[in-house]
Amino acid sequence: MMKLEKMDGFFAARIDGYDEHMKRDIEGASGFYAYTASLLPLAGGSRVLDLGCGTGLELEEYFALNPGAAVTGIDLSEAMLNVLKAKFPDKGLTLIHASYFDAPFGSGQYDAAVSVESLHHFPAERKTSLYEKLHAALAEKGVFVLTDYFAESEEMEKEYFQNLTALKREQGLPKDVFYHYDTPLTVEHEMDILRQAGFQDVRIMKQWGESTYTVLAHKEL
Image 1 (cartoon, helix red, strand yellow):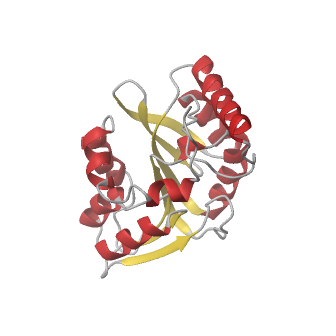
Image 2 (cartoon, helix red, strand yellow):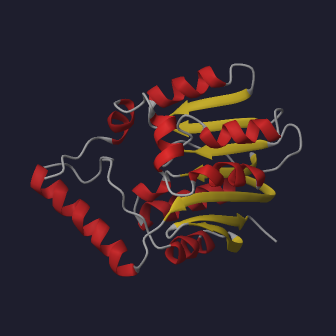
Image 3 (cartoon, helix red, strand yellow):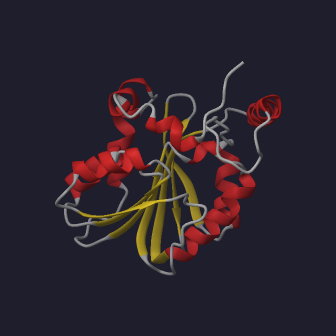
């Protein structure tokens, strides 16, 4: 039986070699970090919020395109944030050690938001309120760029969540604590939640392999 680990502890235990693993073993990673960064604003001083920034693989690409950007990164893993801080000592980088479900985003604070390979760990009901908060945090004409992997069918989506529920029950774990286990939605379901939160012109920009997509959502048209 797979033993579930708390989200922050899971990543802290795997910090060594994490970047290499992501670039080498994740489908589409050789292209999607750079492509995701290319969809973010390029004007100097652009304000960007990164949800689940980790060690900043997408930010390596973004700062190469826009070295004057002001980026706020949020992540549960302090170990990953320490790696990210060491990478960019001279950039406009603000790091928040917290859950992005709990951290306040403010109103109209950001020109864009981005998330790469992070949100596939959480259920639809958590994402609904998160995306509403994110929509409010974006300035007029702001965009959200999401690159992640998704369930290939509704049946698979249900199976992921059923498996997680069973594992928590078997291991006597609380329901309201984040444990590392992939529970991706279908890309159609994810896009529906973004629309319900107020985002407009939500569209797939590119597909990477069988189940990874880059989705672009506008705050307004």
